[in-house]
Image (cartoon, rainbow, N blue to C red; front, side):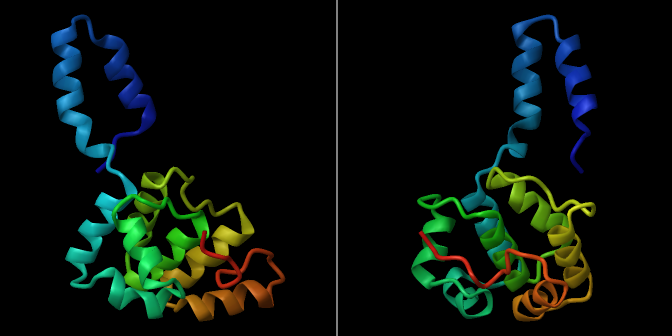
Amino acid sequence: MEKPTKDLMNELTSLKHKGELDRWIEEHKHENKSFGQYFQELCKKYNTNPSKLSSHCAKSKSYLYKCSSNDKIPSKKAVVCIGIALRATLEEINTMLKCAGHKELYPKNMWDAIIIFGLNRGCTIYEIDSLLSEYEVSGGLLNEEEN
């Protein structure tokens, strides 16, 4: 379980010596995973790979392999699509988003709220995209080009 930022800040500001910093960094280095590392871990956990996921997240195999090897950092939408295809939990998708440099899904944001609703009900990306369209929320999941 991740510690709140406030707790981490308190720990850091209480460090007095470089040796304490060394121990603190060793203790927390696992929290700084790249998107590719975390994506690979989830693929292993869910017994899948980028090739198998491509048809479930509307992303090409080559794009997903580039993401898994950190040659490509996916957009927020792409991360959500990949997470949905994995059948990852909301917590795992939020971690994926953070690893890719994005903010977690936020319930006060309408787009994010619809994504959260769909995730909690096991919807596919196509069903969630339909909900976004139904509620006239811009930024559907399926209308983004891969770069």
